Image 1 (tube, rainbow, N blue to C red):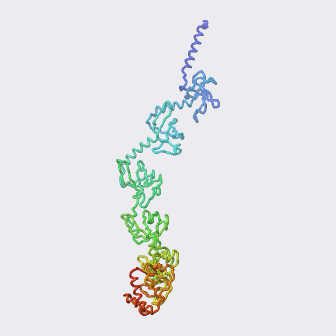
Image 2: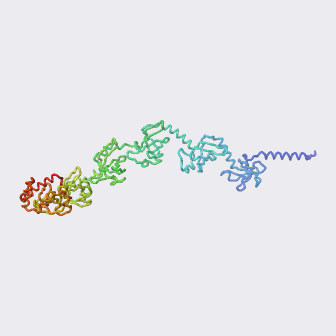
Image 3: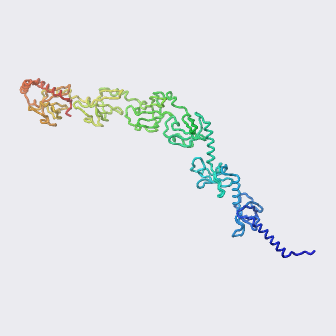
Length: 582
């Protein structure tokens, strides 16, 4: 049978069918979709892929995972980026984009907002950290890392944690996670459980979380408690940082619990025995111990004699002899000193200490070194209104009263006859060990000019002197050895004198006759008027005085003795003491 050749119409129909088939095949591909591809060849770093389209595509070799067998026939998913490249006319494909889109779709299927995921922190970026969750990058804000702010995020890189998904953006294809919310939830549960189980008096392990001026906050593995500065040590604590450090682990006792306000008071010192409970037995009064100065105040020094045990050394107990104005004048913080226990008050946790009690008291033997009546030498150290202090040895002073400074002068202030730093000789008048006082006499170390005054200035003798002071009732005349005599106004001149200063001037040299000597009262009466009188004139004057009812002046010695009675009357009207003219 003969074969019939297809007609031209049939040929045209077949060609058109093939065309329609090719078009249909090509139009099933849409940019952006994920399709399956097959490796047709690998040339260098390019992998040629057949996706069933009229042309092949190329995928860079580095988009495949390490160890993935990339060879002809290997099938995998790719993303169709563009159906035709401007340069090569080949299909533009991306395995990386396909992998990311597949993973993202899987994340959306597995996780929702509020779900918990596990991830590894890969790197630090501005504002937080990047977390890898099943190959998808999620953002962890810095504020969501911990419950408390974290300054340094670097230590978190490489660590794996559970995170809570707080936001998923399909448009931006990003995930925001939080670790803080999980930590807070865990802490809240632990806190509630711990708060319910805590009991007063129990000892718990804790970690110092924060330090303030008044104490420290200690984390009890879920809840914070306050350790007040007064409960840190049985001894003195100036600042909590002296005892504790942030991060330090320690055992603390639960002192009080307020479950409503969720407040816990803790104690550190309560975990050890109270040293004050046995203080009286361990440190009886009179015992001596070596301690360290831990604090100084104006009134004394605090000395630690054992851990948690401090005693006060008052400045009055520093030295037997030195006058201590401030504790810092003798001690420094950190000094080690020997002290004696003076008193113990266990109830109020007070102990009085003394430094001087560990040394010999120089006042115990002062009477042996400075017996009454002995002559001593010393340097004038200080003045008061009533006397001068003379240093006999370091810390031992004697006092010279103004009344014991001169035999002949009235001393109103010690500076009138002494100077600070002056070396003087004196006599010990009295020693009072109990009051720690030594009385000295300056004049007693010198001869008393009044002891031989009657022999030196007998009644009737004519003397010379200088007017040292003028008063309304007469004038004082300075003789030798600092002895003053009084010329009564009636004995200045034969003429009537209304005012002494009209007849005499201070510094004027005069001659006078001794008319009275009273050694006991240390007084000498003088008469200028009687200097030029003969015995006959004196008798005549006495006769005139007798006629006038005054005391007589009869005879030489008797006459002057009688005249002396006139001075008694003058002396009785004034308070005159030896040295008044000075």
